[in-house]
Length: 243
Image 1 (cartoon, rainbow, N blue to C red):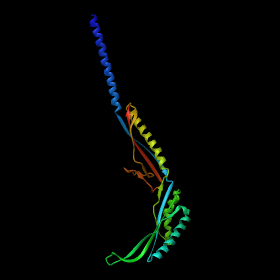
Image 2 (image 1 turned 180 degrees about the horizontal axis):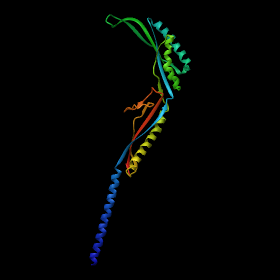
Image 3 (image 1 turned 180 degrees about the vertical axis):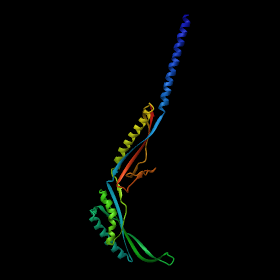
Image 4 (image 1 turned 135 degrees about the vertical axis):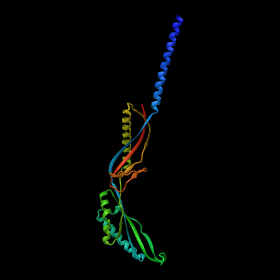
């Protein structure tokens, strides 16, 4: 009887061991299984910025039948352009004038093809102005063709508006976009009675710099330089484990 009782006790202990082991294995499997589950979210942040530096470019030309006359005319135009820009509040150290570009014109024959006979010369110079006063540059780009009234053949180009602190701002916005991604992941996990764990992967998306209120995007990113007021958007893709 004693032997039977001992065998029964041993069997019960062994069975209990199997049950406990099974529970441990099941719990471990569930933990491993859940730890392999990830949640992937996209975080983003946008901020309005105003350009703090601008570059404007224009060009002026003079044409004549002789090179000497074309040069004399261009030299006179050059002085008119410099005087005009100074009258608009730009100092000489902010004004840059390029080397002269010379184009030789030829007489066309009856078939419309150019011959070796020179008909004249066209000389062109580019001028550019840089300034932190973006509004003044913007105004200049729209008014510079007033030089035509002084007999200058002038062409004004659209200015470029830049933001010089973009590097530091990108670092800040990347951090805020990552924070937004984490908050989104936590909201999704909490809605299913779970919580997020460690970061499994993270990748920064392209940066979009658009004109303010523009919805234009590009797979390669945008870098608007035609508008003074812009909006920069930074996107971060992150994956988190589930606890």
